[in-house]
Image (cartoon, rainbow, N blue to C red; front, top):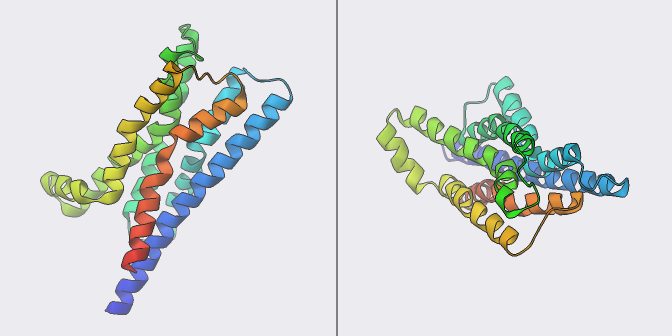
Length: 212
């Protein structure tokens, strides 16, 4: 029995560890893309910003979606990490619509009023992960009240909620203080700074290692 429990913890630790690796890969891809675009003069290219923000803020979501699909195809029992991955994958498309819609409406994407754009690129997938995580808990507990109770005591879910609420305040403050993503590298750095999506899975990974 003890051996089986240990094996389950190791598998769970591996799952959250994979999510952390995916985030680092997304950051690296965003910085590389930003550097390349700046080097050829596309400092303010709207398409370039879309690519850089997608990689920096959502690159891990694409990989996490593949991870969730791979887990399902392998026949693994559904886990919180898998639900987290699916939520991030399906939550990543909303910023594209809002970003391009804002540009069409004439919003200054470099000013204070557009702080919500990098926020959504960085956090919409996290919002999706949080919602998906709750529904996973609800399905497992078979009770909305029990799911809320587990949610309120789960470090991964609470840290996820915390970054969702904290990040927009930080972005707004940075824009108020004069920051503006006028190059693709700055766009990548702003999105990476806002993308604290690595924190909840890192906490899950550390807690699982501690239990193991």
